[in-house]
Image (tube, rainbow, N blue to C red; front, top):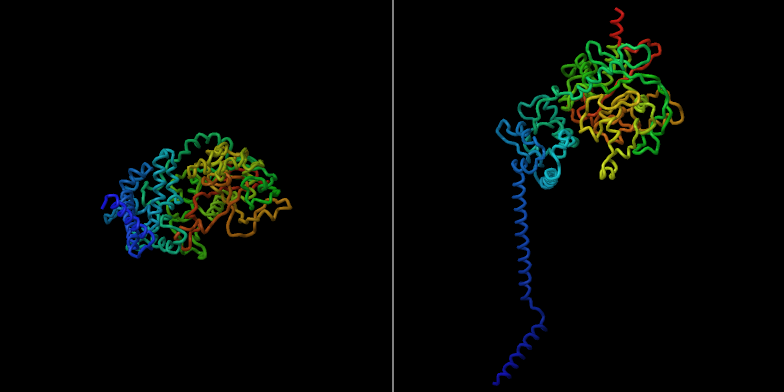
Length: 547
């Protein structure tokens, strides 16, 4: 057969063969090959998933060691050393509690989500923050600790909350914890267990002492011991050398509350109404630890009196019982404002001071407090400034930076306090000579709190008003070291939160002397002016002059 004819024959066969295949429907025999390809893809995906999970597990284990935490994560310069000195580093049984044992949940998906969250924070701090500019003391507070400690981790190690040898105090505390799991955490009571920073604060140095010593000579002239008439004076607490400086506040009228146009005004600050205030004396600063400790020494009780005559009241005794923990929070005492005492304790301090001095001391009314804070001014603060410029509540301020002058000259607040109290008398006074009226600590007023209290005086001149006849919580004023600048306005109102401020207290009934969960409220005393009084001075000093 010729070669050309043979090639044509082969070509015809190929065309016929392929044309036939295209026209025929796909047979069922081709389906297994498609399923095989799908299985291959699934298998590859499964293997890749296993590899990813394994890699993540290896990564989690590698980044959960104490060495990694110390070298790669810890920004705090003393985190490792305080952990080593703590009882958690090596227990009596020889068990070492590692970083992740406390600072990550016990398990589950939350373990990984929290590890990612905290890891991002640590990496950011390590790379972009200057450790010398971080306020480490604020990181040690309960509010901060709650964000990186977990009850599930605590209970994993301490499954038996009532172990052999647990003290009566510990039993009461753990019973209270079991009743209040939805409101509190283990860290409420065991804040400093994981990182030991030394004992207490009683020996802390008062950095304001030097500055106050320099002011003492000037204050002696401005606040004499026994002036005639209605003048500022010094009250020396009998049987001590501790002094209380009292400022003569002249009587007058003012507009109480804030207008609708005032930035960050709240509804309970209105309506604005006319108030007439009689002359009175007000303490130059908040009550200090130095002053309050005289009361503790003279009237304090060594233990709780459960057999008190008034069985319906907790701690029904003549003076304060010892607090749980250190009431000064590790910041020092001396000239710092006394904190954590209850409203009841503040009123008892006033009664004690009245008894031993022969004068009538009490807490200020809310109207007296605002009148004294304003000191004749009508602006949001007693100094020039717009709350909108000082506040961090505006996103633009947070982005571009808030204005800190002149407010930082007159008040300790969120923007300059480093999250702690400061010795009294270090800020500039208001026009009437009162110091720390705004910031540092909030201050008790004797009025019951009501959001619509001012409505009772809307169409009349209120003369020395004393607020509602009854209520559940009392007014507090002035803002504190934790407050935003908007909450330091002279008209800003606040109130006690008794249940929340006693949440951690395990006692039953709870203490009437000390708050367990409030660290930024104090008070200052006032004294009513009697026109028949010939002298404003100290009874002890007057009596000694008669002899």
